[in-house]
Length: 227
Image (cartoon, rainbow, N blue to C red; front, top):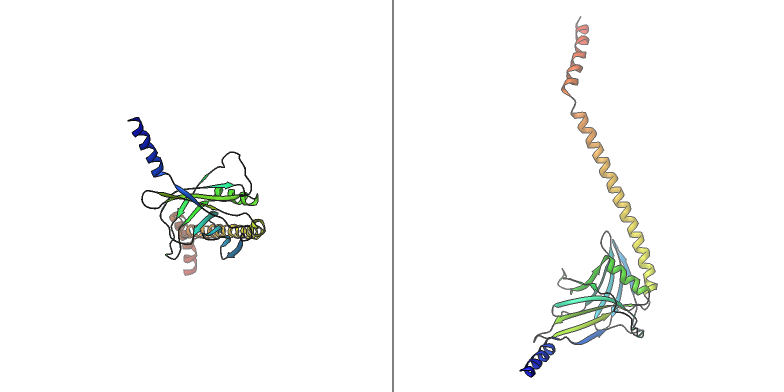
């Protein structure tokens, strides 16, 4: 009976454990970042061979995003995490890095594929990690049929990041100033419109007593004129 229990436990562990991880990483000579900007956005993009791309995106008035996107459809992601890890050639046995919660963004356009991404503080932390030479790494598990799961690791290279980041941060700061100026102009315009509306309302709502007094003052003038 004890032997049967051991066999069952072994089978269950073997049955549900993830398959060997698929790893994606740009090599040293392939790694690089491209800066792009447009009306209301600043973007850094990193090509990951055989996988897809990583992206840092700042849109006007929106939260900073850090994401990866595979360039082909795959089964549903069951769970995912993101952590900043040392460069592959650095074998660090320190404590496990902090793992951030990852979100799945379903595309609106049928020509695009879903993204794995983090926002705000987590995205800022990944920028700091890249500037320090670390490799933000997405680790996720997806269903692959037959009750097996496939684990995938996608590392984002920090090679040549600092160079492109200078353009990105300049664009981001400029856009933040414009957003602030536009917000200030909008507030001033609304306040001016409110003041004008309030003044017009005061002029049209003259008290009845004051109107009666004005009418009484007009009577002697009319009598004098008729005499």
